[in-house]
Length: 311
View 1: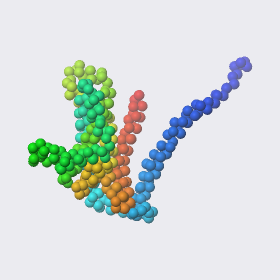
View 2: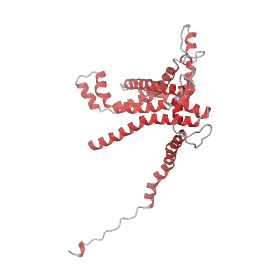
View 3: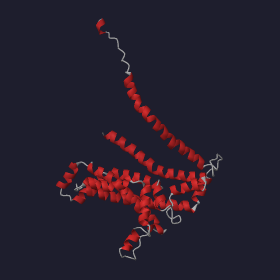
View 4: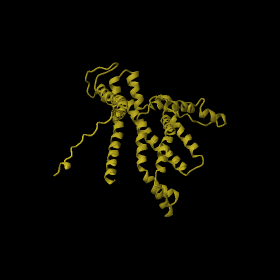
């Protein structure tokens, strides 16, 4: 072996300080928000859990009370009404907003004239906060100067549209308003899914003689099935956290007919001074969110791993 064959490994040059700084800048920028999010979500959630197990009343205390607050919560008739209202609202709200959103997305997908204008109109309610939506719709539902007064002024004196004044129909007023608010959001997601379908699949169905409705039912909609799940999960989160819409629209009334868990948590903690029981109610809301988000997150992870193995 000649001496020319002996090569001495040369150390790689150190990364320039600008390259190292460029690597660190995103971390430094994101670190404060990540730390704040960790404290806001996990630390405060653990503190709320501890309060729910304490004997806190007007002020937080640290005496251990076990599950007494949870037992008192579920023995309360108003809490049971609130949870029943949540399930009733969630079912109609999610199905209604998804059905109307899908219908609007299919109609716009037909390349209608003025598509940008229609998209803007249908998405406009999403730009309005729930508190503003609830306030405006409370005016419309008002029997004195709302829709009922307007129609009666046209001559139909027997017309009745006082949904929020009746405890049996007030919950449906909340449902209608929520659907109006969120249908545009569902439409936007469905429309994005419809536009992402492979055109070759649609052409193949058309060549086979499939009608437009059959093409949507057999080809397009099954292709965007994950979009349905994503929209449903997001809408469930909106439904569980509903507070400002009800607070502005009905304030939980008449009576307790439109009380929701978030309304009840606020009332317990800031009106009645029952922090321990209010924390227990908040933990029950967190549990409801976890029942939705944890399986969905696991499904997303499983799907990405499956796609990675297949890819």
